[in-house]
Image (tube, rainbow, N blue to C red; front, side):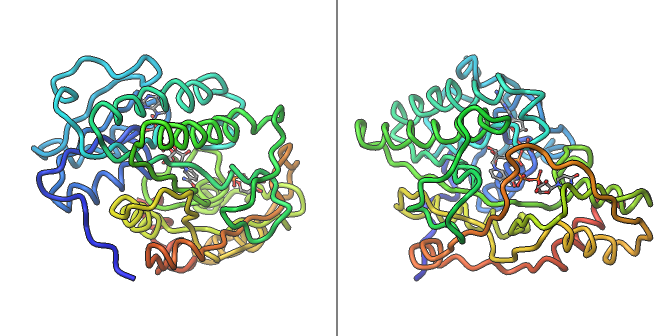
Length: 321
Ligand code: NAD
Ligand code: UDP
């Protein structure tokens, strides 16, 4: 199974949320292929540092705008796009309480605005969805055919349901307009450019380990996540973009760890003497999560390459700088 490159030199790609952690790595990968890339971002959770190295890159343009107001009139947005990657959304569970309406808007109004633009441009539309679409899953590992177990009024629902709405909207446009679409369900991804204070487990544990303070493991720490180094995710996203698959397709790894194991591993790799402190568990926190990667493997030839020790080491090095 080899997917031929479909997007490269001469293609114009719009990446929403392009100054964010994952999207900025996708921007880099598209630029490396020779694409012209326009990032639209309002910096609600993104950072100028993530794109600072592109300041003199002629094939990159940043449009500072809030997608929930629709796409602004800007010279960089006039010409047709060949592909649109909708990656804008706050994504940390701590944001679910702080930015509920912003999350709901970008996952609804923002999604519809970009779908309309994709129809107008006959562009391929790729939607960054999430393993959160499965909620607190009762099926393990999670195949794409599983409909999920989401509390529709819980603290996480603003994010989970916004992403599920985005998936529904994407499939609606695909069926009604014949739009060329793709949905990727992203599992916990980490790496350089995460914000140390974004509240997610990996950046939090690394910051705590590097500062010699206790690692705040929630509950008993027996809950699991399967962690993906960002380079593996970016490769999976570009394989899906290049393919003609609609998805949804899971992207992640089978490196499933308990949060206690994750904390202990980070302490070891950081050479830290931080203790582990058990703290209160967040509400509706999923008990376990691991992708069934059969579709990604068979349809895209996707295979993750970076193990947890290697990926966490690279991320610790980034945070230590
Ligand atoms: P991030 O917060 O670093 O990136 C999101 C970007 O979107 C930020 O730069 C932010 O400023 C921008 N943004 C948000 N609302 C916007 C708006 N209204 N208008 C313009 N820009 C806006 O988060 P991330 O972890 O890099 O996640 C990127 C995407 O991948 C998100 O859609 C997220 O839901 C999805 N995802 C990420 C993970 C993960 O583990 N990192 C897992 C599942 C899904
Ligand atoms: N977690 C933790 N301590 C923290 C932050 C998170 O123990 O400081 C746990 C959290 O309870 C969850 C897991 O780590 O079970 C993953 O949380 P994260 O916010 O990274 O991502 P999620 O998969 O919940 O979106």
